[in-house]
Length: 246
Length: 360
Image (tube, rainbow over the protein chains, first blue to last red):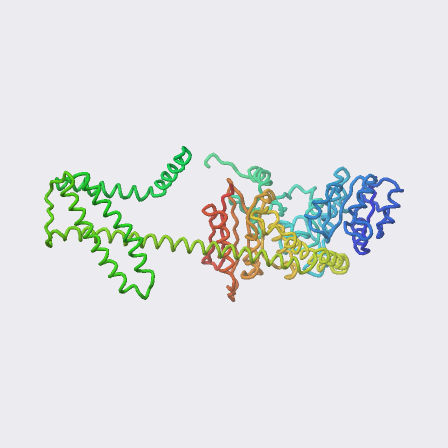
């Protein structure tokens, strides 16, 4: 079942922004949006119970704070969207489930919704045919042209805030996808493992292990993150030839 | 006298003694050395009353010379040349007169039966003059030692004062920035631009987002707090790197290593951000074969921050050393010996910074 939601913000551009985010998420359905807080108050109190209300804190006539108190019983979760500082937010958080500081990215929006509804995670649609041995991504360095990436060519993938850098045997591709999406694409391939908070590596391209760092075939050096150390070490141990002499 | 008054007086005396502990100890050792050791060597001791009387005189001379004679004689630079010799001569004269009087008392009114007689010849005066000059020399070094310590304390105080001023200026600059534009208007406007740009020009939208995050950090700022979570500095650095990546078309070769658990470590503000800002300002970060690195590590309660980057061929060291000096001082101010901060250029033209802080 889809989550139902309502958006209240006196700025039309802000409403449009959040609408576009909601459209990206397949499991959220927008019931209605309001730029007039008084109309919102009347219609919401008379309407059905919803799952989420996104509400701007700073609005004319009736503040988001007052409005939120009046409609709190009509919604499961209440998310403030605000341009105020996070400290201002802390003062009125008692009614709210979460807050989004403007301007916020789609990633932050999706992460907040997923945190509040962990049972129905709403990941953007990443569809990929498993039988192919390649996928296409948009390459930022070449004016967003689509470029083919073969799984067997991937040496490592680095996550950088909103995009990833894919190191293949021959080139480096910068693309606007999240590491979490890449993980979905790669999840059926045993050869890939996370080595660091921001790095996924192809295990067969590890050339050298020196203490806590991995040296890859393309001279890329990667520090192993604390939480990933064990699984990487297990893999290396498994592949190490043991002799009686050492 | 009431009991309380008595107690108060006792207390006063005891604090006076504990305050002069070092002096008392010094004189005890000195007198022990002079009287007992030399007495044993020479095989001759004087009477107790003689010791008490003459050591009182000598100790008094010592303090009088340091705190009165030198203090007044050297006070005015222009009058030094005649005041100093005059005062010393007067002091010497007074010392001799007192010695004669005391000798008279010792010989006639105590059980003294030593070799000294009141005969006014050169031999009689030689010993007291020697003693007087001897103690005056001691007093002179004592005077300069005191002066030196006082100077040093003054310099330290000045330095502290200067540091406080820097902090105050930073705080007020911050407040000034905050006051210039209403944050609410700023972020609403940035949000407006962001929403309008994100479909037509995602790169512009992303840059605005990173910029907004950085602005929010300085507006919301915890920077006037003594300690903040490393989390805040890490986010700020991520945004800074992201902005530079966008502007340089993702060609910036800088890797930022840390594990998420380090975000909860507390540190003084503006150290990590300043170090990374310096890298962008002075480092050559666009050469793929020479990537720059920032790494954060915590091990056994010891936080290590390391940066390393190739130096720009054309040197622009303006402001570098003052920024580094500022960090160094703020670290010393808060952590003292628990922080070790070093930076250097290695033989491969890499500029490296290593900061180790023991976190309590």
